[in-house]
Length: 293
Image (tube, rainbow, N blue to C red; front, side, top):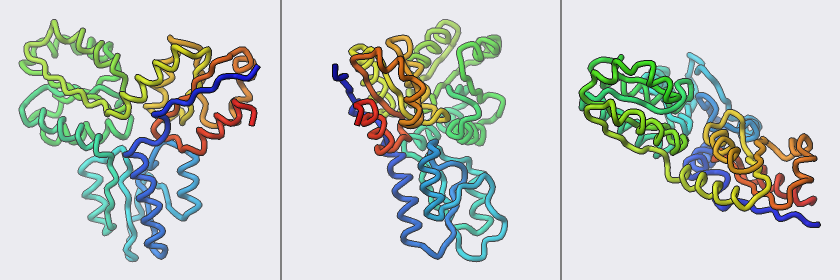
């Protein structure tokens, strides 16, 4: 019996990622003689990073000190702190900022809360590059840097509950790719213990659309296949959201389907979704393999 394979409409590159990848490739095409460096992975997808490498675009953690040939430095979609921007300029690189516009909005909201003397809570993973930059901006404008706190879970907030109860004003922003369930959980905890609570829901529209559509698809599927990097926050959150709804597997490429032959064999209705940093050709290979093409 043929299987029913349904691909989510909102799967694959979001506009911020698409803009970053296309612009970086175009920069190299227009400046073939110049070195182009991306500070950190442009997006969390190893296949895309390898494509850039093949084009001569270098992904680095630290910029070379000597730049006497007009090299270009690209700021990735996750953004970077103001110190990073200053360092790039100081070293003489031409700077191209490809921070996702939605990430910029979170940075701006965090700055706004700090300037208005809120105790700023950033919901997300402290080590994630997007959160690193947001935290840096919030602390730059805070009168007291200790009043900016990153929480990866509600339990992290409970550990500083005495401090939170004393604060006259608490403000919240959230990593763009986080789950709405996490924000709701935090609000439920903070509302009774806060004197003033200002919440700015900075989960991006693309993330919300992707997550909501995946939920609907999961309810009609025996199996959900989530495609994308294990390092991608929005992709791993998709898998976390879907796992309680139906059988879910998270893969990076079509060849990994070999590891789930029995699961796939036993499923009739299979839904496929993908993270915001997953290229279409990878998604199409997965769908094709599921269809037996």
